[in-house]
Image (cartoon, rainbow, N blue to C red; front, side):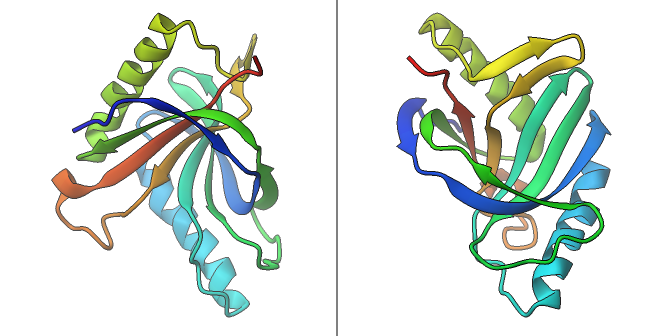
Length: 164
């Protein structure tokens, strides 16, 4: 199930993440990266209570550079593959998908098609190594550790728009 896309404005949000290169399908890399992230929070007795996401930095199908992250204001030591950054403020296209993660590719294609029809442009740059995005997110409103039924997983796609 998909909601209709809408344009929203977001404020900046600080986050901590694991950045890694992956090749589709990349599901085997996601859980260990989230484990690494949550261990960093646990190491300083901070409960992970921010927005959990996958950020797509570079898309060069089937190769990607992604970040497995969570928003936080807590001071998390940056060890191993951890990085700290800020999700930028600005106008975003938002669409929510409910269902198995296997359907996210098609949901993303629908969002991209809708934006193209509306003549919207992403805040991105095309380079010889792929398309680099200012902020392209899959926000996990729940996850399989909380919701075991894949048909009830909720993911919000947030793609930053280019300035008008």
